[in-house]
Image (cartoon, rainbow, N blue to C red):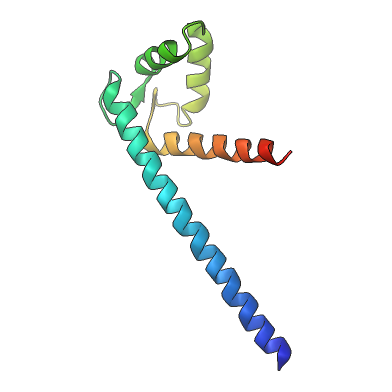
Length: 108
C-alpha cells in the first residue's frame, strides 16, 4: 500500500514539474516573440523577418569594429532554413540555444 501511495505522489510531482516547465517555456517564448517583433520592425525589411542587410546594419551599430564578412557568416549559420532571412521561429530557436549555453557556463 505504501508503494502505491509513493508512486501516486511521485507521479503527481512529475506532472506538476512538467506543467510548470511548459508554462515557463510558453511565457519565455511569448517574451521572445515580442522582442523579435520590436527588432524586426526597427530594422529595414518587411517587419516580420530580419534580412541580411538589416542584420548587418544592426550588428555594425552594436559592434562597430566587426567585419561585415564575419557578420554575414554568423547570419548564414543562424538562418536555419537558408531562406535569406531570420523569421520568428529561427529567432526563438537562436535565443533558446544561447540561453542553454549560458546556463551550462554558469554551472561550471
